[in-house]
Image 1: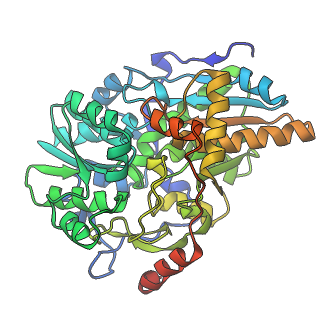
Image 2: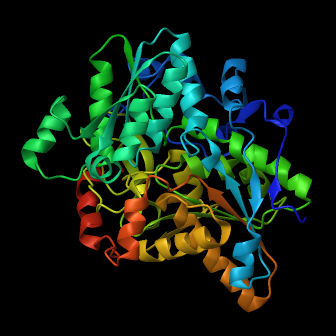
Length: 452
């Protein structure tokens, strides 16, 4: 194949999302009530989510039809292109074929609208007037603000303080689409006030922002909460990416030997990779699937596989997942979307079962890879996306050394146009590497043991 972009027509778009639950290698452990530790039912989630999403969360149906109204919005930017990175290959002198599925073409510049549009639609269908959420780097808050504007729903976003300060234009993008953005922790919620009383200078965390958004939602009858990652319905909505990618590889007469994606909560990684999991687990294809995270927040590589809360204030159900502990506050690295203490239960189970390999990489190496990608392919990647690029480059260099002609695919989850301050810090030598000390992980074990 000589063309560097592989497109699909709108008529070739997937018509249903893929739900991995029936194909997991072992059953998921049930969510537990945050107070009693007993398995929960739909009634526990009803104050937070619309019933349609609760049904998707617990569904064992392999395919869930995409509503026409959702498809109409997705067609603004979908199908997204699968691109061959010929210039990067030449720069590396590798026999590997490197592709990237480019989700940066969405209005918000990332994969996040794939689920934001669906969640806003289902909320609108059930009469919800207002949605609260959290955001790390601002990509999710931007995407949900965009989706809520389309479906005429008010959107209020609690943005992790360090990212709020690092990325002011993300806040402005949310406001452009009618969203309201707060620097979390705030004095608007009990959870936020408690954190500020304990540590007024905290950089914030996704766990804290989730606590604030959930508390806000349950205190207002016209409001529901929306989550940008971790839960099954979110991961499922993202599978449109991997399903498109399979069709595009068929057009290219190629097939990935390796798929590499970054992981915070797990939604973009699941979207790119879950449609390939059954073939891998059934032995139909040999494919390496690699989840990449920062050494500053090594949830999958060094975390504990345990029940834990999804938020700092212990309001959410307990989920069986890899976790660094719900009290964990990561270092203020620039990859704000990867600063979450936990990982999606489905993803965690697949890592625990050895189906997925997890790796952690340092911040400076990530930006070195991002710069190489930008200077060869022209696209400026988000810091989160650049974690996947780092490992893909490393693997392509191995192919150069061994002569192996692997097909490597990067989950290109978003652009870095709002992350130029991070690039400025890297180019001026201000970025430093950071590895999480083992004592912080050990401290998490002390307060998680009751939920083993």
